Image (cartoon, rainbow, N blue to C red; front, side):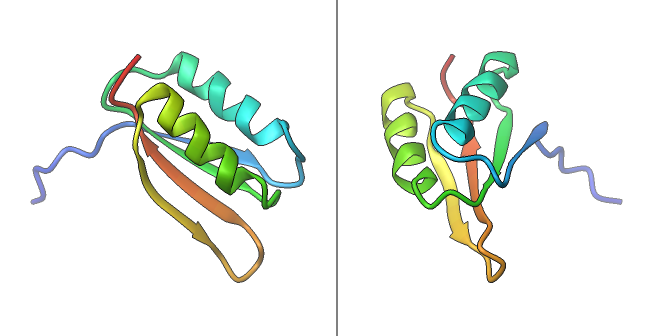
Amino acid sequence: MDTTTQPPRTLVDSRGSSCPGPITDLSMAYRRSTVGDVIELWATDPGVKSDARAWSQKTGNPILSLDERADGTIVVIIEIKRR
């Protein structure tokens, strides 16, 4: 039996939304989060890559991964380290 505890993960689906929609959605999820949470943002706007990097740097919450899938969905996973 696996006793490893996974941090709470919030999925934010912003596919189809253009700037500033995905980062606004991320910011709203961040306001509801606590330290240790993980936010997974899905977006199709290519600008989310630079926006997420800037948001991460500004807030001090690291991006764990940033990947673009074959279907055009960009997946950004952020760990909440600071509030």
